[in-house]
Length: 105
View 1 (cartoon, one colour):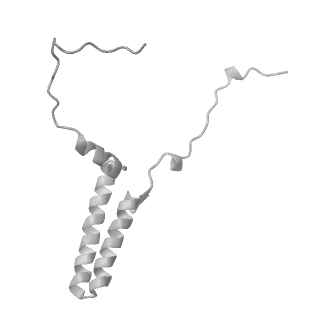
View 2 (spheres, rainbow, N blue to C red):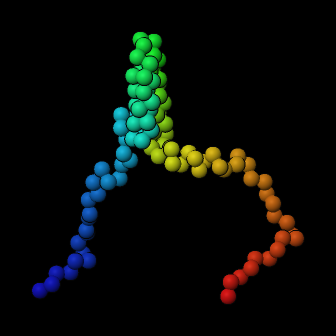
View 3 (cartoon, rainbow, N blue to C red):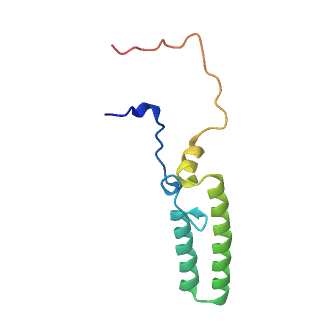
């Protein structure tokens, strides 16, 4: 005998890792790795104490900025570029002399 399955509620669990963005140390993965690379190159290439201090400061400040940006939007590097293309104000441009819409047959 086949039981009526429509009376039962069906739940499909969705694991949190499938729905969360990939973050490293609280920031976007690619940007954090790029920041790490730039700070490391600055520290190693100059091999001076003042360069190491500046490199660590750049790393700490940059990491803090990336983690704060990720709290705002975890995909800010992808959406931020598109956001910069939008204008702040779009004036109304309706006119009674506009061409009528063309219909595809």
